[in-house]
View (tube, rainbow, N blue to C red):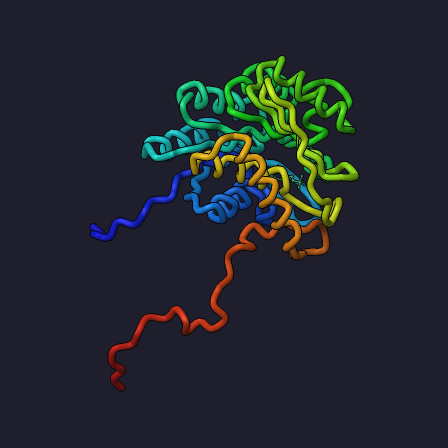
Amino acid sequence: MNPIINNAWPVVLSVAGYDPSAGAGIVADLKTFAAHNCYGVAAITALTIQNSQGVAAVHPVDPTILRESILSVLADGRVKALKIGMLGNFAAAGVVREILESNPDIPAVLDPVLHSSNDFSLLDAEGLDFMRRELLSRVTVITPNLAEAAALAEIPVDNLENMKAAARKLVELGARAVVVTGGHLDKAIDVFFDGTTMESFVGERIKPDNTHGTGCTFSSAVAANLALGRHLRDAVVLAKAYVVEAIRQAFPVGPGRIPLNHLYRMTQPARLTDHSPAVAETTR
Ligand code: PLP
């Protein structure tokens, strides 16, 4: 046993899809958790085939494997927040409902992922209906973008006024709090509604139309901030600031869309030797 006990980082569990290009999904979530001094754990709902140019295929994970993966990490008893991302299908949504039902005290952020930017479906129609009826009301906050808010609320969502209308409608449908993210508008406005207070947060719009995994990253940053004990409104404001900076410091990794630079706060020493162990003696 290691006798040294360091201060433990809060554990955050992501239940989401796997993007092998590491810009979205589980990998983006784990990097985001790390950037917030949280220890990320993850259960995969589906394997996607994708690169910077878009999603080409989705292969759902067997729901039994998904359930067992989630239960096994929860059994360690340290998860302080949940992030629910791409579900893929109705079966995965059903597993997530069971988990939320049996863990009502863990704060949970639901990013209701429906399509990739190249319009590949990331949730089937039955799953969307189930999400609306069964998942919205079981999480702390949902973080739809404009298209997701429109699909869930069943109204057009393309400006500040109808973002607010969608947030109200989603609360009527049972959501406890909503952040409609408007990164695709002329100004990057997010609308926050917790059933009582409606606020809009205006951010700079940087590198428009060219970022990959922004929704995953924002929802994970909110979950990490909740795991760190922050209030929901503060968690949302801090998550937006983190995403803006991660976009500002992004760089291309292929010919297509640009992933966020999740680890922009982390720099390595220029020389490897800066971290090499001290050598007491060298013999030849
Ligand atoms: N792949 C996975 C696993 C995702 O979770 C998401 C979005 O949440 C995407 C792809 C799509 O990302 P984008 O909208 O940046 O194309």
